[in-house]
Image 1 (cartoon, rainbow, N blue to C red):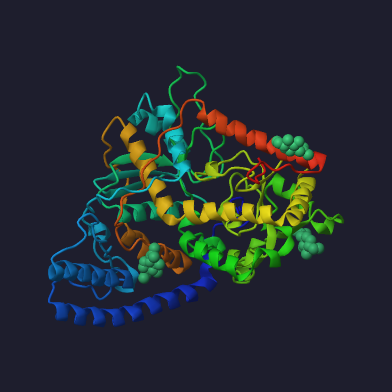
Image 2: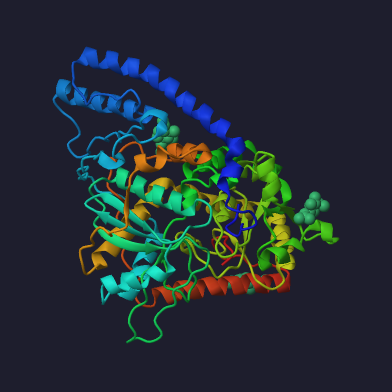
Length: 528
Ligand SMILES: *[C@@H]1O[C@H](CO)[C@@H](O)[C@H](O)[C@H]1NC(C)=O
Ligand SMILES: *[C@@H]1O[C@H](CO)[C@@H](O)[C@H](O)[C@H]1NC(C)=O
Ligand SMILES: *[C@@H]1O[C@H](CO)[C@@H](O)[C@H](O)[C@H]1NC(C)=O
């Protein structure tokens, strides 16, 4: 479940064999429920005598159900002569696959009319959105030229162009598993959510693990090539974008984030913190990364009680056994959860933090788009590089003797994930990042010669198995009724340094406590 999972090949067909049935029954279900809804909608339309766009028998439930809501809101407006003046009604995203789920005609014909913006003020975005300004700072004075974008091509898996709300993609290399597929799917869903509001743009995207673009050496050097990817460290200028797992990771049976987030919330309610095992838990693939092998040695099976319970996730076996025992929502059973980086960042971060159990966060140099908003001592307990086992033991002993504080830390961590990382915010992050990026382009992009047009139909209709299931599950079915959240201002000069310094100090302090053997909490009962 981590990003360093190269142990199995990406022969997805082989792996999806046993999963086909699940997907097929899902499809059957959708189709049969569609019929019922169609009948209901037809009656409804007769009664109110309002004409709406004709309903295609093969549309998905969502489209049909949405027509229903559009019709209802029209009725409301007509009959009561009044409607909310500010908030535009949600438009249904209609779409349909042809027979045999193949796209029969040119797939990308559908156009959702641009949604008018709401005049209601929207709340401010989470603080971590401020890093968007930082990520784009290398180009803030020069802008982004066609040459700079071309310079990023050698790193890229694909080039993405948005022109007048249509999406074109030129593929250069195959990405690992379905990373690129679900990243592109996510971008298409963003366009469905805010039709007509994503500006024209052109960007290069790398789906790999390791950040690759160093900052310019000197002040007067030309800016680095702009490259989008999922993670960076403090020495690289890669532009952070949410990873594929928010829309699903079929190869590991990790469901779309919105579904999983709900399941984790329920799991937290099922088992109270006090009833959980009083140890620190980690489960994953230890084979690829050095840090993980080191933490493995803290396991009780090595003969010493470090308060850690470490389990190996053997993905080959897990796949064979139909993902029995790998459900993330069933892993909120211990009072503490350990986070360890993958071969760079790890998508497991959000699942671990969501458990209501304090996260013992093993230091990593990698950031993803939201982890920069996490504060040590508040959202997690920092575990320093040296003496990992001793730090883990110390943190668990501390928590078990300071239950109130430990529970508060667990809640802060899961609260962050619950609130600041819901899908609405993930989409808004993408919206603002792409909008700010597009502002920097010094030219109007054009359609690349070898590019293909992408839309929900062209991706979901020919898809199969769990890929299809996850696409449908994470599909945006309505345009947004509210505006994106309001972008917070850039950091002042010095503020970034201060934040990094505070983090570093906190880690040092935690390390000192481990060495001294006791903790001195701050006045608001926090670690630092
Ligand atoms: C860690 O210890 C537990 C308890 O002895 C054992 O069940 C588990 O397999 C060990 N984990 C690893 C990766 O060896
Ligand atoms: C959109 O509709 C599909 C099919 O009815 C459903 O499975 C999916 O969860 C919906 N999407 C969202 C984001 O709720
Ligand atoms: C804990 O911190 C407070 C204020 O920072 C300080 O006055 C106190 O002496 C510290 N206690 C210990 C045991 O270090």
